[in-house]
Image (cartoon, rainbow over all chains, first blue to last red; front, side, top):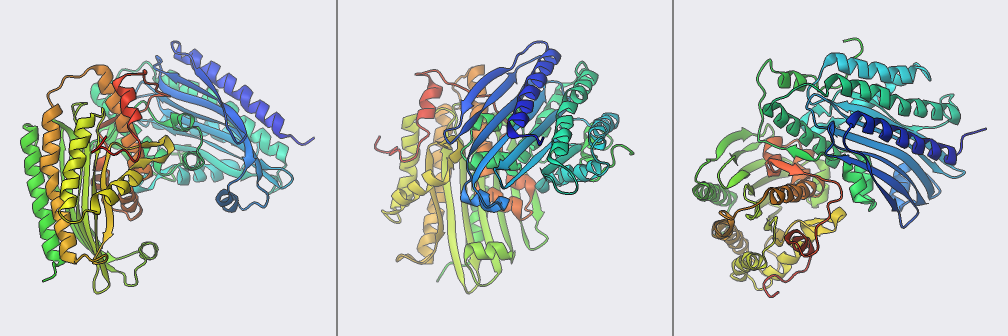
Length: 300
Length: 300
């Protein structure tokens, strides 16, 4: 039996519950606030936001399932014939309080045009304010493990895709240490729909153990005011990426999506200072030096 | 004698000097830091930034004069035949410390393609964190006075243009109380090039007396932590406008301009909280209610 959209939607909703519960456990202070919303043209979502926690300054774990008619320009951009679409997915961004805990983002999504086409897409990427190579290695190894269960080609391909996607062109910097990114996975290349779905499930289920470990490693480290300022500057870059380049954000803004759900990805506070220069040999300078594409984190 | 590009460039440089000197006088603590830069493809600029002042948290008064070959897509977008261009101008954004002092932006520019076409463009707009109607009226009256000296049609037309341009579509909010915006002013509609230049000069020269007055009115007012947070949220909207909609910023990012000069427009600190609700009857609520197009500030 081929998996259908109800089963996929059910998985994403369960995953949202599971992730929110785990993140509340980690935080120990704040709980997610839920807003249910409906889209006038069809469907809706469950936006869940955590703010002012012990560990998380701000974060969102959003589920949505929407359907309706594709605007002509998007139909054209997607190269599809029919225009009745269905899309569901989860989108997560967590901005921690502690400068040593990395920002994380995950998105997994399913799109279909009934009796014409479907695909899965998604990705996870990590944005440390200070890069620790061993932690970046652990992160990439976790993603590679999830990938390798399904295809030995996945990690290499999707890791490169993330390097290219999460890139702040005008800064000539990657957003962080990358991760994986994939789109338009369907039953091509010898894969079945069920196999693609099993892969997406494993990516989604890798989130909690991977991020929990990274949070635990860093959440009790001390930091200075100067380091907090640096975190603000790195968050500024995150804002630049999301508002200038991120396709999901652009799609949401262009199609009159629910703004507060879309822009939950922005940090509670961000900074822009003029022409910041880092000291040679400093942790800040080292981090900047590692914001590059094509770093083989696992074998570096 | 028709004014030439050297005279226009000279005016903009003098205006930059005059404005920086006046703003330093107002601030009383910080001075502008100057960075001279060159554009590999031709021309360069004088970026001047003030940070951590008594009155100004961050601001820039930038002059640039660049020339070279237009990229094919921009040539097409501008609808011009030849591709050797020259452009000069001033761009200003000031982010004050005090929540009661408004953010201001001004840009005046000249563009030409030798022996084919030229035009002037520019604008001034005001973004108060808290809107005071009498101050908005004073601001608009000052701009109208500068406009009326040159054409009684200017203010109405350019005020509407600013309402449409400085609009955050996804928020359904104007950026602030607007101002004037104009582009492609050349020797059409019965105007000569010299007359257009005289108008641009008067706009540029309106900056100091107009903004100085607004700063003086507000700079010593006290404010609370809550109001400072509100300022951060309004600055967040400013970031959204500049990164998502502003054509000058987009042009700069797309054409590999000097990033630190382009993004000087972003505030030192900005905030995004989830789904902020203002109290009915509060100053914040009143301000939001006034972030609309087509308000006749002068006669309201």
